[in-house]
Image (cartoon, rainbow over all chains, first blue to last red; front, side, top):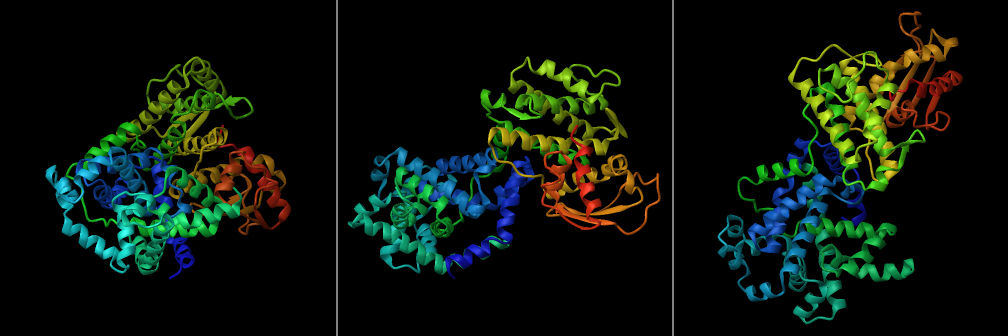
Length: 203
Length: 341
Protein backbone atom coordinates (compact mmCIF):
# COMPACT_ATOMS: atom_id res chain seq x y z
CA UNK A 1 0.00 0.00 0.00
CA UNK A 2 1.38 3.39 -0.98
CA UNK A 3 1.98 6.33 1.27
CA UNK A 4 -0.97 8.34 -0.08
CA UNK A 5 -3.44 5.51 0.50
CA UNK A 6 -2.29 5.27 4.11
CA UNK A 7 -2.63 9.01 4.55
CA UNK A 8 -6.19 8.74 3.36
CA UNK A 9 -6.96 5.95 5.80
CA UNK A 10 -5.49 8.09 8.49
CA UNK A 11 -7.93 10.89 7.76
CA UNK A 12 -10.88 8.83 9.02
CA UNK A 13 -11.71 7.33 12.39
CA UNK A 14 -8.29 6.99 13.97
CA UNK A 15 -7.44 10.64 13.34
CA UNK A 16 -10.62 11.92 14.95
CA UNK A 17 -10.11 9.59 17.95
CA UNK A 18 -6.64 11.05 18.42
CA UNK A 19 -7.96 14.61 18.10
CA UNK A 20 -10.69 13.92 20.61
CA UNK A 21 -8.28 12.47 23.14
CA UNK A 22 -6.07 15.56 22.72
CA UNK A 23 -9.09 17.83 23.20
CA UNK A 24 -10.18 15.99 26.35
CA UNK A 25 -6.74 16.73 27.77
CA UNK A 26 -7.19 20.41 26.87
CA UNK A 27 -10.34 20.35 29.00
CA UNK A 28 -8.45 18.88 31.95
CA UNK A 29 -10.11 15.47 31.76
CA UNK A 30 -8.11 13.27 34.10
CA UNK A 31 -9.94 10.14 32.96
CA UNK A 32 -8.74 10.83 29.42
CA UNK A 33 -5.20 11.18 30.76
CA UNK A 34 -5.43 7.79 32.43
CA UNK A 35 -6.85 6.26 29.22
CA UNK A 36 -3.99 7.78 27.26
CA UNK A 37 -1.45 6.43 29.71
CA UNK A 38 -2.92 2.94 29.70
CA UNK A 39 -2.93 2.85 25.91
CA UNK A 40 0.55 4.17 25.26
CA UNK A 41 2.57 3.60 28.43
CA UNK A 42 4.17 0.38 27.21
CA UNK A 43 5.03 1.90 23.81
CA UNK A 44 6.63 4.98 25.33
CA UNK A 45 8.39 3.04 28.02
CA UNK A 46 9.71 0.36 25.67
CA UNK A 47 11.23 2.97 23.37
CA UNK A 48 12.80 4.77 26.32
CA UNK A 49 14.11 1.53 27.84
CA UNK A 50 15.54 0.15 24.59
CA UNK A 51 17.32 3.41 23.78
CA UNK A 52 18.60 4.33 27.24
CA UNK A 53 19.13 0.72 28.39
CA UNK A 54 18.56 2.00 31.87
CA UNK A 55 15.32 1.21 33.65
CA UNK A 56 15.40 4.22 35.94
CA UNK A 57 16.14 6.66 33.13
CA UNK A 58 13.42 5.03 31.02
CA UNK A 59 10.85 5.56 33.76
CA UNK A 60 11.86 9.20 34.01
CA UNK A 61 11.56 9.68 30.24
CA UNK A 62 8.15 7.99 30.25
CA UNK A 63 6.85 10.22 33.02
CA UNK A 64 8.23 13.32 31.30
CA UNK A 65 6.58 12.46 27.97
CA UNK A 66 3.13 12.07 29.52
CA UNK A 67 3.47 15.04 31.87
CA UNK A 68 4.56 17.29 29.00
CA UNK A 69 1.50 16.26 26.98
CA UNK A 70 -0.79 16.92 29.96
CA UNK A 71 0.74 20.37 30.42
CA UNK A 72 0.89 21.27 26.72
CA UNK A 73 -1.72 19.22 24.85
CA UNK A 74 -1.59 21.58 21.85
CA UNK A 75 1.97 20.43 21.13
CA UNK A 76 0.33 17.46 19.42
CA UNK A 77 -1.26 18.46 16.11
CA UNK A 78 -3.62 15.72 14.90
CA UNK A 79 -3.36 16.90 11.27
CA UNK A 80 0.28 15.94 11.18
CA UNK A 81 0.05 12.30 12.16
CA UNK A 82 -1.10 9.77 14.70
CA UNK A 83 -0.88 10.28 18.43
CA UNK A 84 0.99 6.97 18.63
CA UNK A 85 3.63 8.21 16.19
CA UNK A 86 3.92 11.54 17.98
CA UNK A 87 4.29 10.04 21.45
CA UNK A 88 6.86 7.60 20.10
CA UNK A 89 8.78 10.53 18.62
CA UNK A 90 8.65 12.45 21.92
CA UNK A 91 9.88 9.38 23.81
CA UNK A 92 12.62 8.64 21.32
CA UNK A 93 13.89 12.22 21.18
CA UNK A 94 14.08 12.49 24.95
CA UNK A 95 15.77 9.13 25.25
CA UNK A 96 18.26 9.95 22.50
CA UNK A 97 18.99 13.36 24.03
CA UNK A 98 19.69 11.67 27.33
CA UNK A 99 21.98 9.09 25.80
CA UNK A 100 23.86 11.67 23.72
CA UNK A 101 24.19 14.04 26.65
CA UNK A 102 25.41 11.45 29.05
CA UNK A 103 28.22 10.35 26.96
CA UNK A 104 29.92 8.64 24.14
CA UNK A 105 32.07 7.57 27.05
CA UNK A 106 29.67 5.43 29.05
CA UNK A 107 28.29 3.78 25.94
CA UNK A 108 31.74 2.89 24.67
CA UNK A 109 32.73 1.39 27.95
CA UNK A 110 29.55 -0.65 27.93
CA UNK A 111 29.73 -1.62 24.28
CA UNK A 112 29.32 -5.31 23.87
CA UNK A 113 27.71 -5.67 27.27
CA UNK A 114 25.07 -3.00 26.92
CA UNK A 115 22.18 -5.14 28.02
CA UNK A 116 24.19 -6.66 30.83
CA UNK A 117 24.81 -3.10 32.01
CA UNK A 118 21.12 -2.44 32.40
CA UNK A 119 20.51 -5.75 34.11
CA UNK A 120 23.33 -5.17 36.57
CA UNK A 121 21.52 -2.11 37.91
CA UNK A 122 19.11 -4.64 39.27
CA UNK A 123 15.91 -2.82 38.50
CA UNK A 124 13.00 -4.79 37.14
CA UNK A 125 12.63 -2.89 33.88
CA UNK A 126 16.29 -3.24 33.05
CA UNK A 127 15.95 -6.97 33.63
CA UNK A 128 13.40 -7.17 30.88
CA UNK A 129 15.82 -5.83 28.30
CA UNK A 130 17.70 -8.99 27.59
CA UNK A 131 19.79 -9.64 24.53
CA UNK A 132 17.62 -12.45 23.28
CA UNK A 133 14.48 -10.47 23.82
CA UNK A 134 15.83 -7.49 21.94
CA UNK A 135 17.03 -9.64 19.09
CA UNK A 136 13.65 -11.28 18.80
CA UNK A 137 11.75 -7.98 18.87
CA UNK A 138 13.99 -6.32 16.36
CA UNK A 139 13.93 -9.41 14.24
CA UNK A 140 10.17 -9.18 14.18
CA UNK A 141 10.15 -5.64 12.88
CA UNK A 142 13.24 -5.74 10.72
CA UNK A 143 13.36 -9.34 9.52
CA UNK A 144 11.99 -8.40 6.15
CA UNK A 145 14.95 -6.13 5.46
CA UNK A 146 18.34 -7.01 4.03
CA UNK A 147 20.97 -7.14 6.76
CA UNK A 148 22.75 -3.91 5.74
CA UNK A 149 19.52 -1.88 6.00
CA UNK A 150 18.37 -3.36 9.31
CA UNK A 151 21.84 -2.81 10.76
CA UNK A 152 21.81 0.87 9.79
CA UNK A 153 18.33 1.41 11.23
CA UNK A 154 19.20 -0.40 14.45
CA UNK A 155 22.29 1.72 14.96
CA UNK A 156 20.32 4.91 14.38
CA UNK A 157 17.05 4.28 16.14
CA UNK A 158 17.86 1.90 18.96
CA UNK A 159 21.40 2.92 19.67
CA UNK A 160 20.77 6.61 19.17
CA UNK A 161 23.50 7.26 16.58
CA UNK A 162 23.32 10.08 14.06
CA UNK A 163 23.54 9.09 10.40
CA UNK A 164 27.11 10.43 10.40
CA UNK A 165 28.01 8.04 13.21
CA UNK A 166 26.21 5.25 11.40
CA UNK A 167 28.36 5.99 8.36
CA UNK A 168 31.52 5.84 10.47
CA UNK A 169 30.55 2.62 12.23
CA UNK A 170 29.63 0.89 8.98
CA UNK A 171 32.47 2.42 6.96
CA UNK A 172 30.10 4.05 4.48
CA UNK A 173 29.95 7.48 2.85
CA UNK A 174 27.44 9.70 4.73
CA UNK A 175 25.17 9.93 1.68
CA UNK A 176 24.94 6.15 1.56
CA UNK A 177 24.07 5.95 5.27
CA UNK A 178 21.32 8.54 4.76
CA UNK A 179 19.84 6.73 1.81
CA UNK A 180 20.01 3.36 3.57
CA UNK A 181 18.03 4.73 6.51
CA UNK A 182 15.41 6.14 4.17
CA UNK A 183 15.30 3.04 1.99
CA UNK A 184 14.99 0.74 5.01
CA UNK A 185 12.10 2.72 6.48
CA UNK A 186 10.35 2.95 3.12
CA UNK A 187 10.51 -0.80 2.70
CA UNK A 188 9.16 -1.29 6.21
CA UNK A 189 6.39 1.20 5.47
CA UNK A 190 5.29 -0.93 2.54
CA UNK A 191 5.66 -4.22 4.45
CA UNK A 192 4.26 -3.16 7.82
CA UNK A 193 2.45 0.13 7.29
CA UNK A 194 -0.96 -1.41 6.73
CA UNK A 195 -0.64 -3.54 9.85
CA UNK A 196 0.31 -0.53 11.98
CA UNK A 197 -2.68 1.41 10.80
CA UNK A 198 -5.11 -1.39 11.44
CA UNK A 199 -3.68 -1.81 14.90
CA UNK A 200 -4.08 1.91 15.54
CA UNK A 201 -7.71 1.91 14.51
CA UNK A 202 -8.67 -1.06 16.60
CA UNK A 203 -7.47 0.54 19.78
CA UNK B 1 17.50 28.68 0.36
CA UNK B 2 14.85 28.35 -2.37
CA UNK B 3 12.00 25.88 -2.13
CA UNK B 4 13.61 23.59 -4.70
CA UNK B 5 17.02 23.65 -3.05
CA UNK B 6 15.34 22.92 0.25
CA UNK B 7 13.46 19.99 -1.30
CA UNK B 8 16.66 18.53 -2.76
CA UNK B 9 18.38 18.85 0.62
CA UNK B 10 15.52 17.51 2.67
CA UNK B 11 14.38 14.50 0.67
CA UNK B 12 17.51 12.36 1.29
CA UNK B 13 17.42 13.35 4.99
CA UNK B 14 13.87 12.22 5.64
CA UNK B 15 14.78 8.73 6.80
CA UNK B 16 17.45 10.01 9.16
CA UNK B 17 15.03 12.67 10.43
CA UNK B 18 12.31 10.07 11.14
CA UNK B 19 14.87 8.15 13.21
CA UNK B 20 16.11 11.29 15.06
CA UNK B 21 19.50 10.67 13.47
CA UNK B 22 20.10 14.18 12.05
CA UNK B 23 21.95 17.03 13.67
CA UNK B 24 19.75 19.63 15.37
CA UNK B 25 20.40 22.10 12.55
CA UNK B 26 19.44 19.54 9.90
CA UNK B 27 16.28 18.59 11.79
CA UNK B 28 15.26 22.25 11.80
CA UNK B 29 15.75 22.49 8.04
CA UNK B 30 13.66 19.36 7.52
CA UNK B 31 10.84 20.55 9.77
CA UNK B 32 10.73 23.99 8.18
CA UNK B 33 10.45 22.33 4.77
CA UNK B 34 7.68 19.91 5.83
CA UNK B 35 5.35 22.80 6.58
CA UNK B 36 5.34 23.87 2.94
CA UNK B 37 5.84 20.58 1.07
CA UNK B 38 2.90 18.14 1.24
CA UNK B 39 4.82 15.39 -0.57
CA UNK B 40 7.70 15.42 1.90
CA UNK B 41 5.29 15.82 4.82
CA UNK B 42 3.38 12.73 3.71
CA UNK B 43 6.55 10.65 3.45
CA UNK B 44 7.94 12.02 6.71
CA UNK B 45 4.68 11.23 8.50
CA UNK B 46 4.59 7.72 7.14
CA UNK B 47 8.22 6.98 8.05
CA UNK B 48 7.59 8.35 11.56
CA UNK B 49 4.72 5.89 11.96
CA UNK B 50 7.05 3.06 10.95
CA UNK B 51 9.77 4.24 13.33
CA UNK B 52 7.24 4.23 16.18
CA UNK B 53 7.00 0.45 15.89
CA UNK B 54 10.75 -0.32 15.75
CA UNK B 55 11.33 -0.70 19.47
CA UNK B 56 8.26 -2.81 20.16
CA UNK B 57 5.90 -2.15 23.07
CA UNK B 58 6.40 -5.12 25.33
CA UNK B 59 8.08 -3.58 28.38
CA UNK B 60 6.17 -2.38 31.42
CA UNK B 61 7.15 0.04 34.13
CA UNK B 62 7.49 -0.92 37.75
CA UNK B 63 4.28 -1.10 39.80
CA UNK B 64 3.14 2.25 41.17
CA UNK B 65 4.14 4.25 38.11
CA UNK B 66 0.53 5.21 37.35
CA UNK B 67 -0.04 6.58 40.84
CA UNK B 68 3.26 8.46 40.67
CA UNK B 69 2.37 9.98 37.28
CA UNK B 70 -1.10 11.04 38.42
CA UNK B 71 0.20 12.73 41.50
CA UNK B 72 2.81 14.62 39.43
CA UNK B 73 0.17 15.53 36.85
CA UNK B 74 -2.11 17.04 39.48
CA UNK B 75 0.79 19.03 40.81
CA UNK B 76 1.82 20.55 37.47
CA UNK B 77 -1.70 21.14 36.15
CA UNK B 78 -4.90 20.84 38.13
CA UNK B 79 -7.50 18.66 36.34
CA UNK B 80 -11.04 19.86 35.74
CA UNK B 81 -12.97 19.84 39.01
CA UNK B 82 -15.27 16.89 39.60
CA UNK B 83 -18.82 18.18 39.20
CA UNK B 84 -22.38 16.99 38.67
CA UNK B 85 -23.24 16.41 35.00
CA UNK B 86 -24.94 19.78 34.50
CA UNK B 87 -21.81 21.58 35.73
CA UNK B 88 -19.29 19.42 33.81
CA UNK B 89 -19.27 21.78 30.78
CA UNK B 90 -18.40 24.65 33.13
CA UNK B 91 -15.64 22.70 34.91
CA UNK B 92 -14.16 21.78 31.50
CA UNK B 93 -14.21 25.37 30.20
CA UNK B 94 -12.54 26.56 33.39
CA UNK B 95 -9.77 23.96 33.05
CA UNK B 96 -9.17 24.91 29.39
CA UNK B 97 -9.04 28.63 30.15
CA UNK B 98 -6.67 27.99 33.04
CA UNK B 99 -4.42 26.09 30.61
CA UNK B 100 -4.55 28.99 28.17
CA UNK B 101 -3.56 31.40 30.96
CA UNK B 102 -0.62 29.31 32.17
CA UNK B 103 2.71 31.01 31.83
CA UNK B 104 1.40 34.24 30.26
CA UNK B 105 3.93 37.04 30.53
CA UNK B 106 3.02 40.49 31.90
CA UNK B 107 2.74 42.01 28.43
CA UNK B 108 0.18 39.42 27.31
CA UNK B 109 -1.87 39.85 30.49
CA UNK B 110 -2.17 43.53 29.56
CA UNK B 111 -3.28 42.99 25.96
CA UNK B 112 -6.76 44.14 25.03
CA UNK B 113 -8.96 41.07 24.59
CA UNK B 114 -12.59 42.26 24.33
CA UNK B 115 -14.98 45.19 24.26
CA UNK B 116 -12.18 47.54 23.11
CA UNK B 117 -11.00 48.14 26.65
CA UNK B 118 -10.93 44.91 28.62
CA UNK B 119 -7.48 43.37 28.99
CA UNK B 120 -6.87 39.65 29.45
CA UNK B 121 -6.51 40.34 33.17
CA UNK B 122 -9.79 42.31 33.19
CA UNK B 123 -11.66 39.50 31.43
CA UNK B 124 -10.57 36.94 34.02
CA UNK B 125 -11.73 39.34 36.76
CA UNK B 126 -14.99 39.83 34.85
CA UNK B 127 -15.54 36.04 34.70
CA UNK B 128 -14.77 35.77 38.41
CA UNK B 129 -17.28 38.57 39.09
CA UNK B 130 -20.22 36.80 37.47
CA UNK B 131 -19.12 33.42 38.85
CA UNK B 132 -19.11 34.98 42.30
CA UNK B 133 -22.86 35.56 42.06
CA UNK B 134 -23.31 31.79 41.78
CA UNK B 135 -20.75 31.20 44.53
CA UNK B 136 -22.64 33.60 46.80
CA UNK B 137 -25.91 31.89 45.89
CA UNK B 138 -24.38 28.60 47.05
CA UNK B 139 -23.40 30.18 50.37
CA UNK B 140 -19.66 30.44 49.60
CA UNK B 141 -17.74 33.48 50.84
CA UNK B 142 -16.89 35.99 48.07
CA UNK B 143 -14.83 39.18 47.94
CA UNK B 144 -16.07 41.87 47.89
CA UNK B 145 -19.42 40.70 49.33
CA UNK B 146 -22.37 40.71 46.89
CA UNK B 147 -24.78 43.56 47.55
CA UNK B 148 -28.47 42.65 47.53
CA UNK B 149 -29.89 43.03 44.03
CA UNK B 150 -26.46 43.79 42.55
CA UNK B 151 -26.59 43.91 38.75
CA UNK B 152 -24.04 42.14 36.57
CA UNK B 153 -22.32 45.35 35.41
CA UNK B 154 -22.06 46.68 38.96
CA UNK B 155 -20.69 43.34 40.13
CA UNK B 156 -18.01 43.35 37.41
CA UNK B 157 -17.12 46.97 38.24
CA UNK B 158 -16.71 46.12 41.95
CA UNK B 159 -14.54 43.07 41.27
CA UNK B 160 -12.47 44.91 38.63
CA UNK B 161 -11.67 47.67 41.13
CA UNK B 162 -10.30 45.06 43.48
CA UNK B 163 -8.50 42.84 40.95
CA UNK B 164 -6.81 45.64 38.99
CA UNK B 165 -4.78 46.32 42.10
CA UNK B 166 -3.55 42.73 42.30
CA UNK B 167 -1.08 40.77 40.16
CA UNK B 168 -2.79 38.98 37.26
CA UNK B 169 -1.58 35.58 38.48
CA UNK B 170 -3.40 36.19 41.78
CA UNK B 171 -6.59 37.03 39.92
CA UNK B 172 -6.16 33.83 37.94
CA UNK B 173 -5.61 31.76 41.10
CA UNK B 174 -8.62 33.16 42.94
CA UNK B 175 -10.84 32.84 39.82
CA UNK B 176 -9.84 29.18 39.50
CA UNK B 177 -10.18 28.48 43.22
CA UNK B 178 -13.67 30.02 43.25
CA UNK B 179 -14.74 28.00 40.17
CA UNK B 180 -13.48 24.77 41.74
CA UNK B 181 -15.25 25.67 45.01
CA UNK B 182 -18.51 26.15 43.10
CA UNK B 183 -18.12 22.69 41.50
CA UNK B 184 -17.30 21.14 44.87
CA UNK B 185 -20.30 22.76 46.56
CA UNK B 186 -22.59 21.54 43.75
CA UNK B 187 -21.22 18.02 44.14
CA UNK B 188 -21.36 17.85 47.92
CA UNK B 189 -24.56 19.68 48.80
CA UNK B 190 -28.05 19.84 47.34
CA UNK B 191 -28.09 22.85 45.03
CA UNK B 192 -30.71 25.59 45.35
CA UNK B 193 -33.27 25.57 42.53
CA UNK B 194 -32.27 29.03 41.35
CA UNK B 195 -29.40 31.46 41.68
CA UNK B 196 -29.47 35.17 40.98
CA UNK B 197 -27.26 36.52 38.21
CA UNK B 198 -28.91 39.87 37.64
CA UNK B 199 -32.15 37.91 37.59
CA UNK B 200 -33.06 34.47 38.91
CA UNK B 201 -31.81 31.53 36.81
CA UNK B 202 -32.42 27.81 37.30
CA UNK B 203 -29.09 26.66 38.72
CA UNK B 204 -28.55 24.21 35.84
CA UNK B 205 -28.97 27.00 33.26
CA UNK B 206 -26.76 29.31 35.27
CA UNK B 207 -23.89 26.82 35.08
CA UNK B 208 -24.43 26.33 31.33
CA UNK B 209 -24.42 30.12 30.86
CA UNK B 210 -21.15 30.32 32.80
CA UNK B 211 -19.68 27.56 30.60
CA UNK B 212 -20.80 29.53 27.54
CA UNK B 213 -19.31 32.80 28.65
CA UNK B 214 -16.08 31.17 29.83
CA UNK B 215 -15.69 29.59 26.38
CA UNK B 216 -16.41 32.81 24.46
CA UNK B 217 -13.90 34.77 26.57
CA UNK B 218 -11.39 31.92 26.22
CA UNK B 219 -11.59 32.47 22.47
CA UNK B 220 -11.20 36.24 22.98
CA UNK B 221 -8.10 35.65 25.08
CA UNK B 222 -6.62 33.01 22.75
CA UNK B 223 -6.91 35.46 19.86
CA UNK B 224 -5.38 38.27 21.91
CA UNK B 225 -2.37 36.27 23.12
CA UNK B 226 -1.86 34.20 19.95
CA UNK B 227 -2.36 30.76 21.45
CA UNK B 228 -4.42 27.87 20.01
CA UNK B 229 -7.90 27.00 21.19
CA UNK B 230 -10.56 24.37 20.56
CA UNK B 231 -14.37 24.61 20.77
CA UNK B 232 -16.13 22.75 23.60
CA UNK B 233 -16.41 18.96 23.42
CA UNK B 234 -19.61 17.98 21.55
CA UNK B 235 -21.26 16.57 24.69
CA UNK B 236 -20.72 19.96 26.38
CA UNK B 237 -21.49 22.08 23.34
CA UNK B 238 -24.90 20.50 22.90
CA UNK B 239 -26.47 21.57 26.23
CA UNK B 240 -24.76 24.98 25.97
CA UNK B 241 -26.30 25.44 22.52
CA UNK B 242 -29.65 24.23 23.80
CA UNK B 243 -29.55 26.93 26.48
CA UNK B 244 -28.82 29.58 23.83
CA UNK B 245 -31.66 28.36 21.60
CA UNK B 246 -34.10 28.22 24.53
CA UNK B 247 -33.22 31.82 25.33
CA UNK B 248 -34.04 32.97 21.78
CA UNK B 249 -37.84 33.45 21.95
CA UNK B 250 -37.47 35.94 24.77
CA UNK B 251 -35.26 38.08 22.54
CA UNK B 252 -37.08 37.48 19.28
CA UNK B 253 -40.42 38.41 20.75
CA UNK B 254 -39.10 41.98 21.09
CA UNK B 255 -37.14 42.05 17.83
CA UNK B 256 -39.43 40.31 15.33
CA UNK B 257 -42.77 41.78 16.29
CA UNK B 258 -44.28 41.21 12.84
CA UNK B 259 -43.79 37.44 12.98
CA UNK B 260 -45.10 36.45 16.39
CA UNK B 261 -47.03 33.44 15.25
CA UNK B 262 -44.23 31.83 13.27
CA UNK B 263 -41.53 29.24 13.72
CA UNK B 264 -37.98 28.96 12.43
CA UNK B 265 -36.30 25.62 12.04
CA UNK B 266 -32.66 25.78 13.14
CA UNK B 267 -30.36 23.05 11.79
CA UNK B 268 -27.07 23.31 13.63
CA UNK B 269 -24.50 21.13 11.92
CA UNK B 270 -21.36 19.51 13.28
CA UNK B 271 -20.62 17.50 16.43
CA UNK B 272 -22.77 18.72 19.31
CA UNK B 273 -25.35 20.25 16.97
CA UNK B 274 -28.93 19.22 16.31
CA UNK B 275 -32.24 20.52 15.06
CA UNK B 276 -34.44 22.93 16.99
CA UNK B 277 -37.79 24.51 16.14
CA UNK B 278 -37.77 28.03 17.51
CA UNK B 279 -40.97 30.01 18.15
CA UNK B 280 -40.48 33.69 17.39
CA UNK B 281 -42.32 34.69 20.51
CA UNK B 282 -42.62 33.40 24.02
CA UNK B 283 -44.78 30.29 23.65
CA UNK B 284 -47.48 31.41 26.04
CA UNK B 285 -48.23 34.72 24.31
CA UNK B 286 -49.44 33.61 20.90
CA UNK B 287 -50.36 30.11 19.68
CA UNK B 288 -47.99 29.00 16.94
CA UNK B 289 -48.69 27.23 13.68
CA UNK B 290 -46.98 23.90 13.18
CA UNK B 291 -44.84 24.39 10.06
CA UNK B 292 -41.65 26.45 10.25
CA UNK B 293 -41.79 29.46 7.93
CA UNK B 294 -38.04 29.36 7.36
CA UNK B 295 -35.07 27.05 7.86
CA UNK B 296 -31.63 28.25 8.88
CA UNK B 297 -28.69 25.84 8.55
CA UNK B 298 -25.38 26.83 10.12
CA UNK B 299 -22.40 25.24 11.86
CA UNK B 300 -23.17 24.82 15.56
CA UNK B 301 -19.92 26.44 16.72
CA UNK B 302 -20.45 29.41 14.43
CA UNK B 303 -24.03 29.77 15.68
CA UNK B 304 -22.78 29.90 19.26
CA UNK B 305 -20.20 32.53 18.32
CA UNK B 306 -23.02 34.51 16.69
CA UNK B 307 -25.09 34.13 19.87
CA UNK B 308 -22.09 35.43 21.80
CA UNK B 309 -21.98 38.46 19.48
CA UNK B 310 -18.63 37.32 18.09
CA UNK B 311 -19.84 37.00 14.48
CA UNK B 312 -21.52 39.35 12.02
CA UNK B 313 -24.97 37.92 11.12
CA UNK B 314 -24.57 39.22 7.56
CA UNK B 315 -21.30 37.37 7.05
CA UNK B 316 -21.90 34.11 8.84
CA UNK B 317 -21.88 31.06 6.56
CA UNK B 318 -25.55 30.18 6.97
CA UNK B 319 -27.91 28.61 4.44
CA UNK B 320 -31.45 29.92 4.56
CA UNK B 321 -34.60 28.47 2.98
CA UNK B 322 -38.30 29.23 3.00
CA UNK B 323 -39.06 32.83 4.02
CA UNK B 324 -35.57 34.19 3.37
CA UNK B 325 -36.33 37.66 4.69
CA UNK B 326 -37.60 36.20 7.95
CA UNK B 327 -34.56 33.93 8.20
CA UNK B 328 -32.23 36.90 7.76
CA UNK B 329 -34.08 38.94 10.38
CA UNK B 330 -33.88 35.94 12.69
CA UNK B 331 -30.10 35.67 12.26
CA UNK B 332 -29.71 39.42 12.75
CA UNK B 333 -31.54 39.17 16.11
CA UNK B 334 -29.48 36.26 17.50
CA UNK B 335 -26.52 38.33 18.80
CA UNK B 336 -28.91 40.47 20.87
CA UNK B 337 -29.65 37.54 23.16
CA UNK B 338 -26.16 37.71 24.60
CA UNK B 339 -25.95 34.70 26.88
CA UNK B 340 -22.57 36.33 27.45
CA UNK B 341 -23.44 39.33 29.61
